Length: 393
Image (tube, rainbow, N blue to C red; front, top):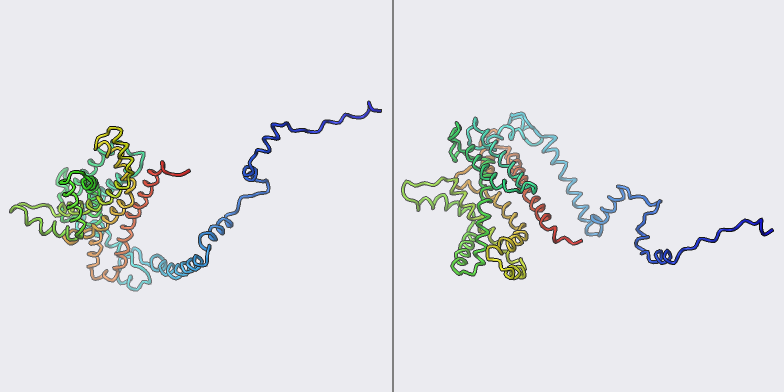
């Protein structure tokens, strides 16, 4: 009977709005939905894909990769054997080092105090250690953006004065140590750091003066920059050491370290000025016109709009010059100052340790490389931080 038959539910029907929404769903969104069977690629698969794309993408890349692997296979094991497994580390016995198959790092263990501090009195060497520690800590704090506050401008003079007191002495019960006895790493850091701090503001003024509309100022800046850039640093140091005292009145002398420091500042400022000038030329003309339209004066326009953009563009050449200047401090040997490289060479004057000059130069090279690598990496960090507004999505 028709009354005993169960009622069948009507078939499921989509509303017009649901059909329209389903048809309008983009294909990319459907394809992007992960399927339950899809799994993340394993580490081996990722490494294989990276190697195929970067190391073996073509016949030329494959050949270069194989050549580099062969060079590493040939060079790395002997170097590890010489520098680590077969090296002598702490036994201060030159005879034992001569029979060793590797490096004689015992030379560094025996001479490290002279390499680091030069002729500075042995019992007072804690003072340059403390001065270097204060200086390096202040540099580390200054490189960390959250510490860029007003008190940092006061910390620098206080730390520099403290370092000068520690190095010179003569007050607070400290024995006076003349600059002729300074040497090693503290002297290199002093020459480099003071050279950077002193040359940078001068370079900005020279770059602005070279682009000035006043003929006298422009002529003086151009003449200074071109003259200093036309001579090597060693000649500037020679003039500061030998020729400059001849122009002083009789009985008047200037400290030898101060003369070398001023020469380094003047030489570095000339090169930095050209880097800053390149940054100023890279600023679009519209920025100048916009500043003029706002009614800003010359110094307001330069300090608030033009110069920040120019320095951001000039970061790579500026850091490159800072690194070059840090290494060029080794040239102060010409005026009788014992920097880090000179103390390392002087330590080899001991006849017993003279055969181990490679270890001495390798140790100093590692120190120079550490500081230069830090400067280069920090410049990359600053570039990324300042380029946030220019990144493309």
